[in-house]
Image 1 (cartoon, protein in one colour):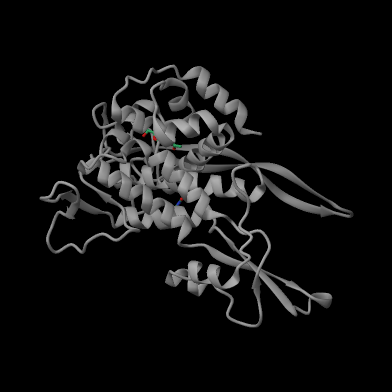
Image 2 (image 1 turned 135 degrees about the horizontal axis):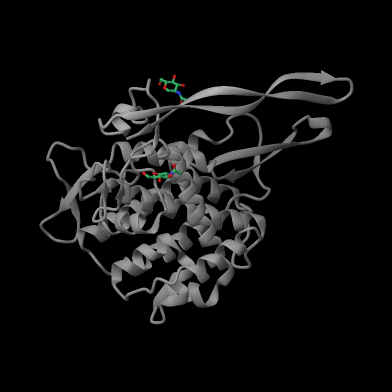
Length: 356
Ligand SMILES: *[C@@H]1O[C@H](CO)[C@@H](O)[C@H](O)[C@H]1NC(C)=O
Ligand SMILES: *[C@@H]1O[C@H](CO)[C@@H](O)[C@H](O)[C@H]1NC(C)=O
């Protein structure tokens, strides 16, 4: 297990005590799930059950959090806020209710769904196994609820469910039990937004399952085909959630106090897949302890791009410094009989721009 040293390190190094504040426990779930179980003695309900009785599941949950974090950093690599895991920043991001908060919650809930489901398929958990999909009619109906799912069914020839499918409903359920547990009985706006975004994240996995098939029969004649359900690659989940981030809707509490409505009357109500938020984001230009912004000084930018990674936007108009760096690369590669490729190393000059 490659994860083990990391987890042990997390447990040993991060000795920040949980203060007992409700929201701190909540953000700790996202920052490092193992710690929640270690430090919080008075946990109750589903969360406590997982902590006490399901250590191997907890390990998969921690993996899922990492899967989510890595994807978040990929999706935001060129933006002012780059999904940094620097604790003093992430902690503040998670305590607010901005678009960024929404994305982190959604991608984490998705990552946990993904990792737990994958573990079921791999046979790494005793609690679950892969999805055998034996009763054809039922399963077909169940999976074909969404348009996406219908599109991904094989259209030609004879086929039947078989093999080892991804048991996404188990991952979905466990992600919900773990991530949502502390919030279930609350109905303040931040909680409603969080639960909505967590679900949007999980749905970005579950509702975009695809079908994979394999042919059986004499020398690939494909007289029988068996098909199984498979999760989309996590990059696709990330791309989808990033799109939702870009189109996220701002909400305010409704009069009944138990739900939310969109802020402007003309904005179309957010669907289950959409991300929502209730607080405007800071601009992340300068370091700010209150918002968790680290500022963009020292960040690399692209001097010719008009987009978010361009120096103008990334550096917030402060300007940038340009350096020439020399980089070693392989060059003049030759193929030598047989079977070897030899290269020289060359130095190439590269321009690097960094924000002031
Ligand atoms: C993210 O941004 C911070 C400062 O804004 C910087 O220190 C850090 O290196 C960046 N991380 C990555 C992975 O680019
Ligand atoms: C910088 O941006 C331009 C225009 O968008 C793009 O063509 C170029 O590949 C980018 N350079 C780097 C190093 O990413």
